[in-house]
Image (cartoon, rainbow, N blue to C red; front, side, top):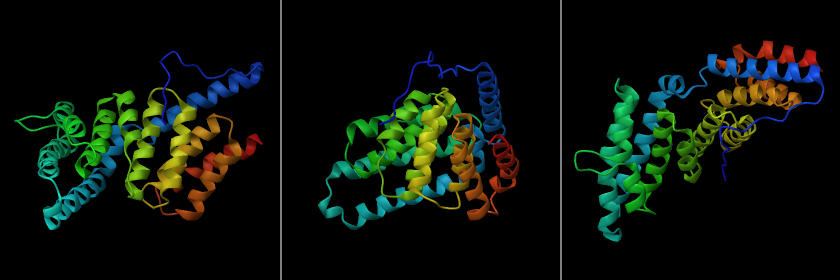
Length: 254
């Protein structure tokens, strides 16, 4: 279960003065590096929006196809849920690709033009495939709006057998925790994203983030392992071009 702390949350303070200065410097450097390597949601969405829309579209299509094929055993309510989801998902896709993204994300969440939004679908069609997908999309919408607490809450409720979407949901929770300055929780969810799927699309990104945050938390051995795994398993990834300096820095600390 994902948990968050209030803004007053503070990291533990090392007793040794030199260690304290070094840790604070390292932590500041890590979060600066996270920002410069597209850790923010807006940059991530811009880079991977086509894949996200394709994945979400395929799931929506599979839901529609399944309902169409076995309509005789499904209640009308479930068909209604898919219809409502189509409009909400349309707003979500416009938000990802459009300029007025905040208002469109809110419309996707709350509905418009006489149609339900993700939140209505979750409340009114609980247990349906449409409600499950709406839970994921609601979490991503909140993440893009900067409402990280709600993003964590909805993404943590999302349950799926799709390993790719599971990895993306876990990683997005990690991003939300990073934004509210809870590095340990962010690190744990980046690791969970890695465990969910080792695909070439998301794994290098979460390995890199886990490595950076792991180093800031004093988990140098684990961090080096994550960086070296990028080198060995994903040498063609963008992250592979960034890890050599990180490995050198951490090995010199040992």
